[in-house]
Image (cartoon, rainbow over all chains, first blue to last red; front, side, top):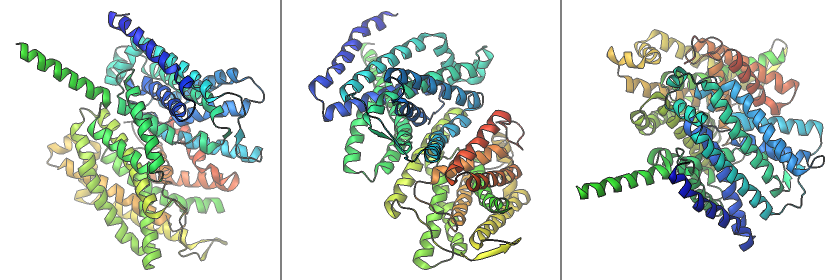
Length: 313
Length: 288
């Protein structure tokens, strides 16, 4: 650990600890918004773990999320909840491994295309299975898990994700991924098994998204394919991560908080224009702040530093 | 037999759509995720002319297609060109253009929902039966198929027999070298992009003759077109046409034999199969 990292431990713990107090203060609107913030923080940060260094845009979050949700919804009568959450992680990992093996050995475009339709593909299969096997199109999730508990579970998961992200960032794997992101051919020539490195990290990312879906399942009492595999989740995760900035571990967080609050306002006041506004925010980010809020802050900061230096000289 | 003929008719329109995407991705090198939305815009165009002016889709094609050409040309000049200039390398451009066109697709869906509403649309045009090999098929399907054949043949001749077609092929093969022999590369790229969009919109207009559509269905067609292009090979026009027929046939078979809700799933299985065993496409040379 560097000195700087040691110094940041205490503030980070303080932030998490004070966040954990939220359910004690309010269990209404602010708790529900906080759940969304933590949920998207976990999803966007785990998305960035893979897509940040490699620049491979994954649009599959909804697929993993939905799989996790269905694992809990489908197995609740047979197995205990904690086991199902664990199982969701395993299933997500297997799905990610299969997708990775099929697409990550090839160029990035194949991966993007594949993930674009993945949630819809799985949704069609689930709908078909449910309508041919059973009579109803959805499943009931009846538990005594309150919103406060969901929040704490997600917060713990967020801590895990940040810890994992920090550890990957300083490991050989993280280093290998950054090289792949800069130039895949160079990476291959350095002796990095590029396909393996990408697949491993995609598995981590996908598994976390599945666990998130599993933890959130009790929040909806009724789960059906249209809700669980809603493609909007994938798009929002991508946009939040990009808004925050994908080259720092804490970047997505800076995108998640403003966007979740803004999105809540938008969907209350303009419920029919959400798609249009989502598209506009996408374009604004790509054209105006390509490196996200973090990139913007760092640029201003470095300008300020160099400005100060000039004054001294 | 039924499945083969319907699959063939559907495949014709798919070929047209996929060629549109191929022009944009193979020649202009922009992965356009808003392609399906432009297709739906074409469908809405044909629908609007039919319901407000009783104009046959076969005629409104001649209005919709040039409009789509101009519109796509503007998109390329004002939205894609800045990204091309900004990009330090091919990978950066790929990421940027995927994100930008992805955002565009949402804007189109939002606009079309705002203008036409979120429900399903269809109109009845040429719904008489037509007898073919002792079976009857909708005349509108056959008309749509003929439209695609005419467009595909025209494009094929244009690309292979004219001067402009030659520059297009040159830029597709080697954009850097094309500039050295006096080809205006930026203009050719814009032309390919605009032409691709126009062809896609024409495909959308002919699809609307026999398919029900809504404002948000575009992404499904983007997926299908992408799968066809990858299956056929990014720069092989013959491969794309054959792959379109394969997809049309497989989809029709799955829809009639198993469940109409599984058409995308069928396309996906085909996609996985291709990725695992022949990622450079059935008829392509090397993967790019």
